Length: 529
Image 1 (tube, rainbow, N blue to C red):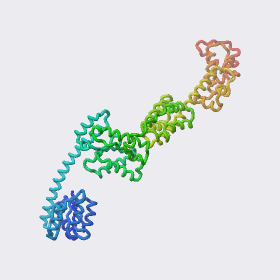
Image 2: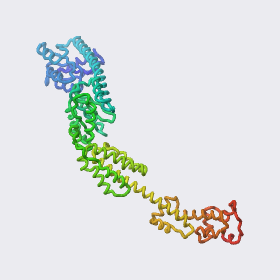
Image 3: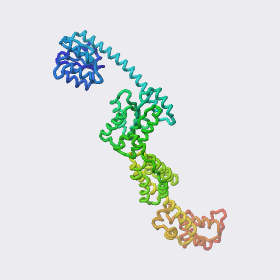
Image 4: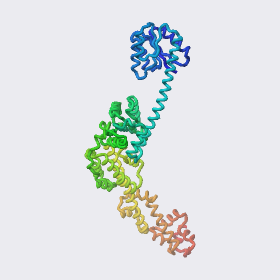
């Protein structure tokens, strides 16, 4: 359904035309009404009618002024003039402003219907042509964008291949002078959308092509670098946009053979957002950063020292080394290659090596590790520095804890060895903790964690286990065995043995296959039976 606007200062004429049109063409038009040219112009701005029928003589703004205003717009509606004056001057003015039909009042309905049918036929032909042109343009643009994607994102494309493919796709118009721009807005998709909308709103034939890459960046080929600069300026003026995007712009390309190299220049310029930061990073030109000093080298000894210090608790020394590596002075002098190399060495020599040596840490440490794994996860190098510093401290604590656990395990192993060698003596937890030089309370906690039971229960099990060996393998009397395994009182030994095994020591001996039945004598006094 088309939208049709009737503009006439006479209400009866407006309503009459509306009724005639809706009866003759049911369902074809949505009819709007305006009482003067000013109101009609406002409705055209809001509703964008495809057809406008207007009277010549109206207050506020007459019909000629209305069609003059409408014909200056990009989407000019089909214009039909009504006049009660058979004045050739009006007809000439109407023709000059591309009015399609000119009807005299009083309106003859057949003439009106015929005029609207002619306008409809013209509109349908124009739409068909426009549709074919649009389809052709979409296909051509699609081929060109596919070519750009291939040339820009496929490794190993030679200059000759790039030039041939671009010419085949009809990109010759960019051959003599062009630029490549890349807009990156991580986490702020609305800025990419606004960038695309801005370009569409400023479309000038042959000026630009753009597509969104798989990693969410807007890649632009343009003959007019100011268009890209204006787009970034427009984003900068948006509330809250500062710092949420960065853009890189290549140097001038003068041959299609350079088109991949210019894309790489834009990518290289974009990397400098982590060094420059907003507002300088809003638009970074390759020409401004290509000669940035590359004499500074990553101090590998500094990275090695950081790796060696993990687990030592030397936070201040580690921070000083980190500032030497990534601090303001280093960032001010370095090019982006320095930062990339520093990031690589930190990952390989410090973080990765720590996890290979000590295993995976807590989930929170691993989250920081994954984030700090790339310089480009951060808006600025100082944010990367803070993340690396936090990760170093977390790993330092993690390694210290592991070393502490390892040391504890060694001490506990020594403690158990001491118990097994001295179970027959007057052995207490104080004696054993002193032997391994650990605090009494700390030893108690660590011992229970290591063995799963208290010191007293563990010692009892060791003594009863040794007693069972002696009962099965010797003719020693029970009271003699009790003394040999560390019990001063045979009655206490029998009680503990029965609690542990459910039977008395003598009953245990009698159940052994090679049991030797001794004279009952003294054993009957101490067997607990």
